Length: 401
Image (cartoon, rainbow, N blue to C red; front, top):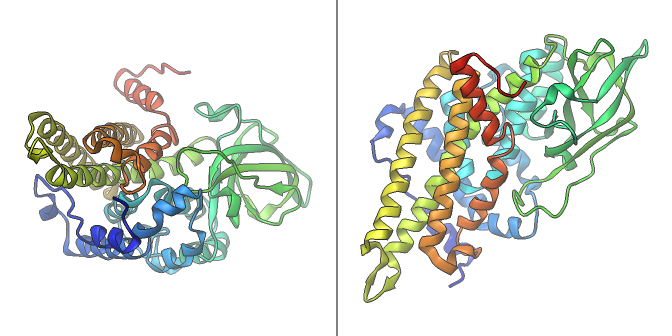
């Protein structure tokens, strides 16, 4: 049976997040208020429409200023730059709520927050912060992050993009690919090598001559998100657009730590939505004169889903504590990103089986989550690379260098 937008909205407002270990008791009243406020807004403005956007491969750019007004961009950055000034636990909660609805929307928000606003705040100067951050926080501007290249993904140090000092400006050449937000971004934080071979960050603005952002089409995944390339053909970049306070891979990798942290929370949101959908369907779907929730194999699936979600919630809550205390390591973040995305993908597959043929339709969110998670398990560090990061951390030996 097809659901109307009003029916989808009614279902969304009934959503109850799984909390088997009573973790709500560990969140502050402010954090729970933030979560409920974001959840209510998403249920009203995103959930009823997101399937249509995904089906039509349409990114809801028209909501960017509303998302900014909701505090979804740069929530962990200071209020003096127009940002909410929250902590990283609240950032994780927000990412979880957005990805409960759709990974593509979470990508849009986390790229803006962790990969664009964070490096400008962390590695930029005060003039750059004041110029860019308020407009990014409000959603007036949307940004993207250029690191991955056609031939260099897991090995970003091999990048070919480079720039030369031309006296009164820099001249940038190269390209980036698989860039979320690229087709409509107003600015791009781009990583390229200077003449000495050091990796530096540059802020590019749409309209710079020689700078183009062609869109990548024919995606089966993240269809409510826009993905593209960044092409640099003798782009003249003003010298004041260089991020002055970082050099080397630690710059972009520091951004990725913040983004991967958000992903570790967000993926749980996808898993929770798939579990909730499967549980409700199993309680209502009658076969052999009783609901399929009464059968042992269905209960096994549901019990295992809830167990894995609970384990991921505990893992990520502790990671959030460490992040708030500025003690979370890159390796700890890698472990959580890898575990939680894989967990969510497995739950999406099991949930789809509970729904049978209905699981592949747009009447339910499961297939959309599943296809989105096939991208999330690869981007910002593949499943295998994150495993090797843990291996390197425990042995002291790099297996990929």
